[in-house]
Image 1 (cartoon, rainbow, N blue to C red):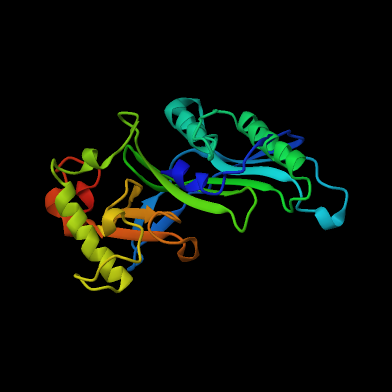
Image 2: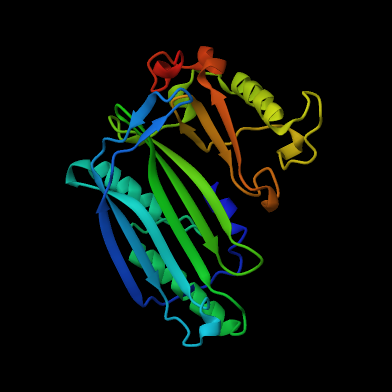
Length: 279
């Protein structure tokens, strides 16, 4: 899905050369999110440092062309040797080329490809204004026993009227070292009822009646459908539709929170989210 969204703004991409780099780290600070009554939901107790990566092509000497270059910027957690699975997972996310989905496992390598695209583009279209941007921000958004949820926010600009941003979630089962899907959390044949509950919440959020057609949205055949971009939270499953998925760019992203209490009969008794049903 991330590839499809980003690809809409990357049709003219071609690649480039890198010039300058900084790569710094800062120790993370534990953070606590709170609910509406200010009771702690979770505390980030993982040990990691924060990496700040930045590389750019050579900038123009003309002040009026200060934006006429390409850069790659990334902020992400770096885990120690004892968390090799998390380290590899983070690298697979932040180094994936948003225009192809290829996992390079190296920001230097991915940057070189991005810069080459830019320089080739400028060679073909030297008078094209502006530069290229690839901005990646990965953070720990939720944590529990053997569970880590990453939120990856990506922004890419490769010319045109605007860039494209996306938010993608990764729910990690640390014990089994895998990324969780809805099948890991919900009972078999969950889809029909989950979709019905989600559709009802969606209509309420959007201010439309139960029988009002979905003509203004981009759902296939005008039928509501959940995507697979979800995050585990303490209150419910948070689904996010990125730009162009169901709405035009001007409407931005759409969040849809399905409270656990609304789907408690669908939740596996021994799943990661079963403990949150009555909270």
